[in-house]
Length: 122
Image (cartoon, rainbow, N blue to C red; front, side, top):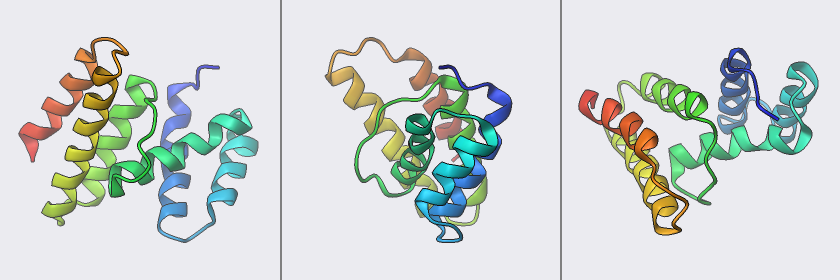
């Protein structure tokens, strides 16, 4: 099921709140599922992806390009004053690209373009 792009900002908001401990991961999942009408299984992916970009733990799968771009852009904005976290987030994203390419999931030119766009800014 393709998640409409207009839902992604709220998915990001709930994922961030869960990561920051303002709500639990399960609450974030339920909000995404119930309020945004996202499949329950898919609702978990947003927290996992957010967490991966911050910590680099538990490599994840890819989400659609709009979501990848939105999450990366907003994490970099949210951590604007934390240069080290911004570098780590970009490194985690780059490692995700390399993981997929190493698994021969196909060319990740679009993901690399997103990485390059933000790498130039940092």
